[in-house]
Length: 217
Length: 217
Picture 1: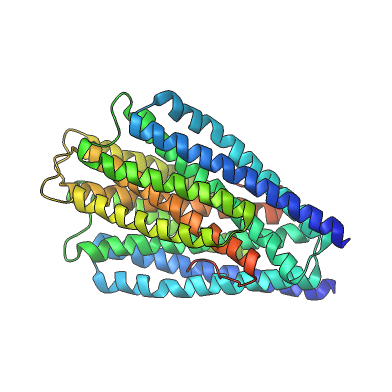
Picture 2: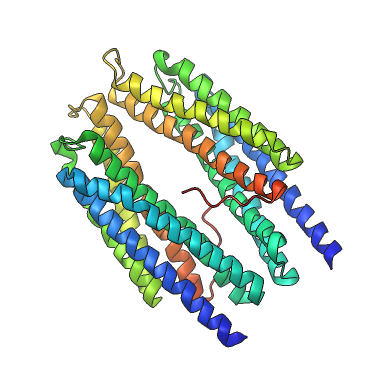
């Protein structure tokens, strides 16, 4: 029984890795689409999001089956519950990629943000991609140093998020309302993407170390 | 054993009702703070959010204990898993109230949005409050007609959310960048609040009818 359970847990982990890799691919394409105004790449992200959603639903069903068949307790139980939560957060990360891609599509052939903000969004995008790659690696290897790195990257994104508002609300801002709306939403999506990654990293850290971290409060 | 389990499920439901009522209180105060620029009410919402968070964490722990002690299967198992998801969504609804209250606090003593948008936000706020009250009643009574009403109210909020962008991006918009930013964020928070309610309503509907609704895709 124990061996079957371990095998089933490995399968849960493999599925999480698969979804995390798709999320990394999704944010890479979304940020490229956003920065370079690449509408076909944006559409690819939007169309492919159903794969992340479907895999997350399938993973949840698998986790519920494990709960039913194996009735795990203690740490094993928390692993399965954590997997359910990680899958929900990965699914939301895919949604954030999609929202970023949608902004690129709406504004095509224009770029989403005016020149003065492009370096900021290039950096936010780069960090989100970095975070997504580290997250996929973290889920694969449980190397918890990556969790710390993800938290640090998230701090940088939070600072960039605030700097977007400083810029948009500053006296030198010449953007029109549409630029202000897009910059506000895009910045929020980038920031939320990273938040979800931090939330997942905490759970993986728990799975690796046994130190339970409560839900973000 | 079965009787103990039913008793424990009732406790889960009572806890969900308690959190749902706090969320309804929170969005009522937040929208009043937002519409009337009431900073003390805004601070109350922000300070009280920890109660929702703490109750959600406690509920999760309780649900995990039930999984460990009772090893429920089939529908009983799905009820407990649904409770975990409902608690996560309620917690996020509390966050949305808090974000709305934070906008009111930042802009105090000014109002958050210019006159031309106030009727729209008054209506969005009214609908969010309505949704939160219906949700608390739905969790209490499992009267699934309320789930349908919540979906209809959410459709209205989605339409208002789009109308905010029409207004802000229209030729008659005279708002400054700060108004555009605040309107964009506030509208997004109101819309997300309602989305979470719809997601919860689906799960309660399942609990009442046995028709499993997959996670939002």
